[in-house]
View 1: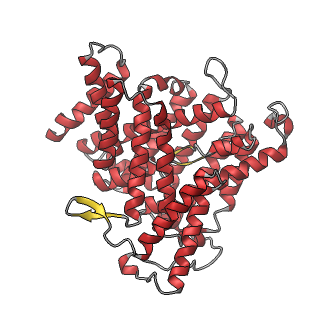
View 2: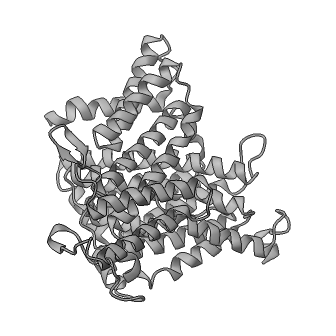
Length: 454
């Protein structure tokens, strides 16, 4: 084991690696109930999504540990699952099978880009400042979703407003949960997000016990008490999501209009995932002291290929794009330096499968605090944002505002890139963005002005 994982060579021990893997799992296990909650809103079976989430996380993380030898963990990514449900399914009106087909194709493209080494060279295509703004915009979008799911933000005369009745059980408990989770996160408590979810849920069960929280399935208020501790019923749910992407692929080519939309959706998934993953890799690898003076680190192509395989498998199982989680840094901080850390995390995701009844009973107001704090975490890189430079400020603000107000990650990326190109032209630096950015700009202009006429 020591020789295979290079444990001693990297200055670690078996005990340290296992503890680091446990820590990583605790900090990112919130994705199981959160991803299930978000994707089930798109019409996918809850049990199927839960099992697809756990299995794709297990497969991707296991590959990361055994093949790439990295202490990084993977799972369906936040932001990408929101784009899947709220943009592709809700805003654009496509079926979840259509969205899964786009994820499948994205995964296949990713695999080719990873194995050929092209993917590692794409980081320079979109400027750093715009990537920082896109990350923050996705974070604020996720926060907004958390506020909506918990009932803190509701529709009103001004399109949206703060719920005038914050004393409703679910709404009040969500606010309490957000406060608890923020405090735990500030105090750097391991597993702060997961602890916040369970504490809020337990408070909800107490509220149901005293009659404050009223069970009303017609209003979407279900019992907060799990029907069982252990069950394998999620396997029957997987039957409804497994292979759904293939029917979506068939539907995508049913008409010329669908093909164009399918390409745009796939490209959006592709680019959001590329830069989200590259940023996470760079940050966590730096923390693990794996990056050399030239910015390279060992096993990078295998690492990229691991999440490409996981994304492809995840799409077939029935979940959104799998990506490397920034929470992997928690395991690195505990001393994880080898693939054994990732293998440990992967095993724990597999062991979580029988506990579907417990995780399935967790309400949206209990997962909302995790969404809010994840959103805050995604805004952290903005400390590097160059606010005084117009080429950063203008496209950055457009990217953020269109993501949140337009309720669309793809719209934010589109307008961010278009206004970046506009600013560079006005500055007399039209050549600086590069060919990739101009190709993207042309595609977005086509989508805005030509596609609606087709």
